[in-house]
Image (cartoon, rainbow, N blue to C red; front, side, top):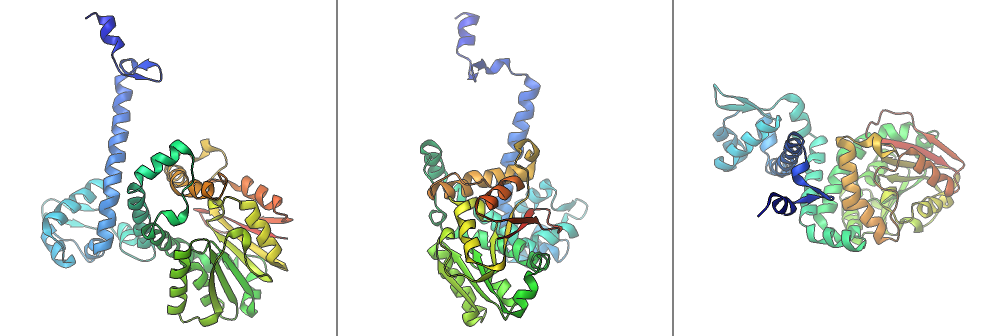
Length: 368
């Protein structure tokens, strides 16, 4: 067979033979792929460690694999390889002379202490649930059909609850205090609606912070509302906090002093309709607190690890949910301009970016 015939059988990439690629650049791509594979498997191990107490046990002090296994009541062979993987990732420090591993304080603060360990477990649970849905994603990409939030199952919703508890709940006090005129009205006794409440952790936190106010949480997912009602009852809040199954664009009632959207507007098929209904349900001096992921509407400004994560979340969770509701939605990183445009289309005359240190979020206060 001639050289030309052999080259004709070589793999092609977008019309070019793979052999035409620079070997050094191919090596770089392979290196990046290996890093991604390591991170994927490593995240699973990180989640296992969070769920069986390995991180907390190692935070108690340096340990050999056997010592850590005994502390955590786990099997030593698994713990040994878990420690080696975490050391390779840079989370754990290995001391060869003593054969021990130790956890740096900063890592312990993230992996083994509240509230951030909830973020670790929450994102890990969601990642595990998404891998289990590979065939569904393939079908959705081919057909364009949506995937509703309720189709992901309880592990995914539980993961979102843990993320909310780790990220939103600890920040609520400072967020609400930064809104013009809101905290005083709620302290005196106001009405609040939390749209897209999920399992209800932020809703309950608002009610606990303002015991004179009444708080309603709504979500389109029946299972999430069932969990939220249980959590509200366990918090002993009685009729101060209630939860109802409702679409965002069909917010029940009116006379609200505050309506909140915590990282959920971008999930909706009709974000303008949801904001319009929130505006209609406000009192004359009421406000909407719109919290969304930080980032730019210009993709080239989000080409970093955070952007990669949020774009992936958009493709796997947020955009599919919006498509299930009838449109492609805003995407997980809509950017401030798109949010302001949506607010204007919904009839809000005042939009103020809240001046607060929130590196992961954009906070906007909307007024009629």
